Image 1: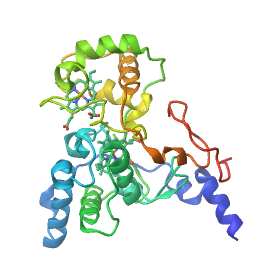
Image 2 (image 1 turned 90 degrees about the vertical axis):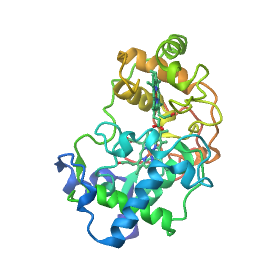
Image 3 (image 1 turned 45 degrees about the vertical axis):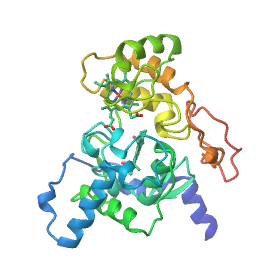
Image 4 (image 1 turned 30 degrees about the vertical axis):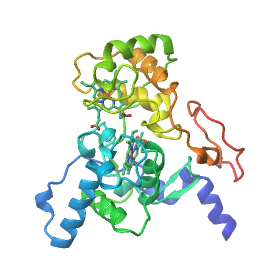
Length: 275
Ligand code: HEC
Ligand code: HEC
């Protein structure tokens, strides 16, 4: 019996859950806060939204850099193709290869606290986490559990080999005016490397993720559109600059499946490999 359960966990793509929901894809819809009727629920959701928009000021003990959640989840997580939070709640619990287990949305939120924000996890049962989860649940209003949402995540680019020297040129010409000549951030935009940036364990530290983000979304004013090659070049340059370490990273991908562009050493898989 237990062995059968393990089998399902080790092969999530064949689980009944995934099969049942594989084809379900729903339109992108941002619910209006006017739809929040119940007073207590509304207060919790709006407080959660405020934490996502003003993360550093609101939760200084949990944030270890100059970012806020909405620095990467643009327009407060409401923009399609910019890793929107619309529909996220409905896609959890979810098996993730990086953790090698089924993660709750609380686990996923704390991943971004510990990695993207170079900070510390929120206590899962405390008010701050509950308010953020309430807001995420609201943003999934009407979206069935397990469904995909149009515009979720980032639009992935075909992988290209980035050249950091060319990337330095793209950075100076296109990014420095907002992110600072040495990537340290300015009043206009956040740091891209150095002690106040995301750490090496963050999703954005992967070149493919950063390239897809930058290609689709940067510069934020779209004054100059980059080619896919330029996006890979600048992402390679940015992600080979120094940034905070993430000591827990050796425990990532405990069942294997480490992506090629996760540029750090992990312990050999201890749990069964996925078949
Ligand atoms: C440095 C950029 C960055 C910052 C800052 C950031 N995130 Fe993320 N976040 C990501 C990336 C990259 C992903 C993975 C997106 C993907 O797989 O398409 C992600 C994914 C997520 C997801 C899962 C979305 C889904 O639908 O599967 C949630 C929830 C989330 N982040 C919440 C947060 C919260 C809460 C904060 C602030 C504590 C935060 N993020 C800060 C980059 C960031
Ligand atoms: C017109 C100003 C501007 C330019 C030019 C610009 N950005 Fe940004 N960038 C922003 C803003 C604003 C944000 C979001 C910050 C926030 O809201 O907290 C951002 C966010 C980011 C993020 C996610 C947050 C972080 O700090 O990790 C990355 C990565 C990024 N930009 C990379 C680039 C790259 C690479 C270029 C050059 C190709 C570039 N940007 C050009 C304004 C700019």
